[in-house]
Image (cartoon, rainbow, N blue to C red; front, side, top):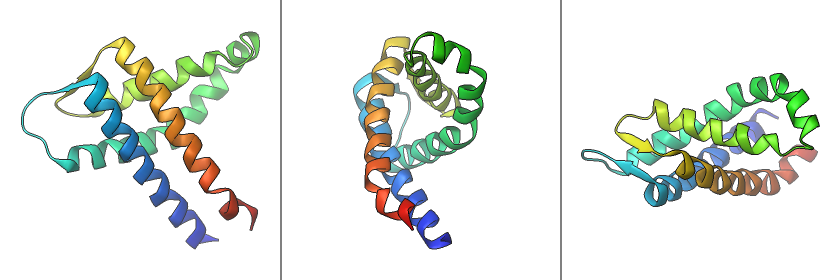
Length: 122
């Protein structure tokens, strides 16, 4: 059981790192010197934000999610990407970049959930 959770965490972290690399490269601006560790740390921060903050935001926004038939989750996804970018040093992104990045990160999270289905069955 623990082994599956550890594998799931590292797979999620790896795909979040890939998604943040795509998002920051296409829609963000990096000031100063950087290397691959910036994207690895961004993926870790996004994974932690998605694990801790997103469920709380979803619970508090549940009436709006129901009222908009789920469309408000796009705003929550954008807020999670914006929070990650805000925490990251030397990385900036405008609002529309965060919106487009939330689409990229939603696809990455969907791949994680799709790929981890065998681990969730046991």
